[in-house]
Length: 467
Image 1 (cartoon, rainbow, N blue to C red):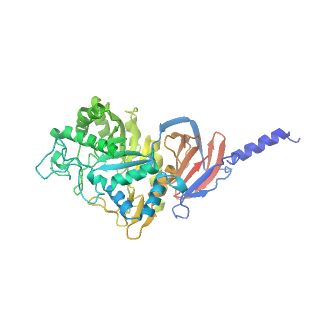
Image 2 (tube, rainbow, N blue to C red):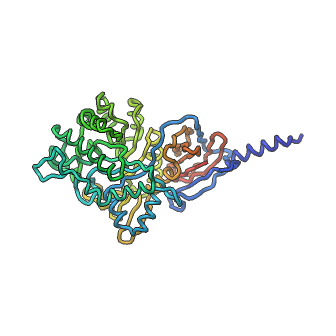
Image 3 (cartoon, rainbow, N blue to C red):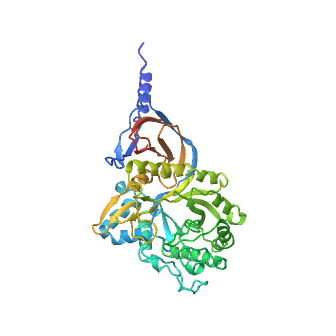
């Protein structure tokens, strides 16, 4: 018996919908493969396979954190390279590519600055240096001049391109005269200078705002459990961090009416006990808005372990560097995507940052510290050539498509080797990022309300789906 016309129409609509093509806005896909034949390249979805290896199910009704974005740090090294290693035309083109989505740009919405020098500075400095043996508790010699040379102009250029760009900042060390070593290198903050250090950070926030660079968040100290031997650093145990935040920095920000948030920890996944110890101080905890993490030791699940105890605090991922210790695309592309773009977000991160935005072919400029770190891009100042590195494409698979204010939504389904994360953008579009860490291709289907499509993701590859 022939089907009535309306039944035929309904059946055809359902079949077309199953292939993801029955809508005015079909599912679009972008692919990056470790052989670099596809680099954020458009790709086609298919009808669901008859026997997929698994199904990824998207539930937009289950919503989680609101996203601030993805990005990388504008270190002094990065700012100097962008401003002096490129012609004005090349500089303008690269900054547009990094901080907007025009013409296929990656659209970074988040960046991090160093308050004074890090290892990725051309010399070691603070914003209030004094001769050995001298102190300046009134901060009469405080100056942003070291940042005015390159960092502030670079950040202002990024903000002009992307006014929604959120800027956070972290010190690598207090001025040497505030420390037990009387040096930027190693040592701890002396108790008599807790108040001076809080004022130093607030002077930075106020000064940057006057320069047109609002700082939305501060961490008290980059990697507070690490004292490097050849570049600025400072050890700050949990009790010290609690005392500075609870008794000095937090009240000072509040008194001045500044909205800059304080983020705790800013160090690796392997010591979740440390932020919990600091946050056990009830006074300090009232001034803390979030917990920040780095990737160099431990497992990303630590973010959720801490968040279970302080669910009212935001989660941020603030540093991870690529480097020549892991140059293989087939290994590093899925690792970065699985752990940072997907893993840190599934474990609560509102924002995700790589370390240097740009470095040169010699992994600098730097003074001390990492000798083989890799920037998101490599700039050769001798030729002006820009190389887009593994980190550029891994992060671009999220940053180009996930808008600021997006919500992470539920994605479920286990497929051997696949990791995934999903978002709903403020405009209602859906973004799904999938990474394949397996040594073989993986064939899967994606199911969402009104959508069903299939895809075969090559080994070691990353794909983004948007509809």
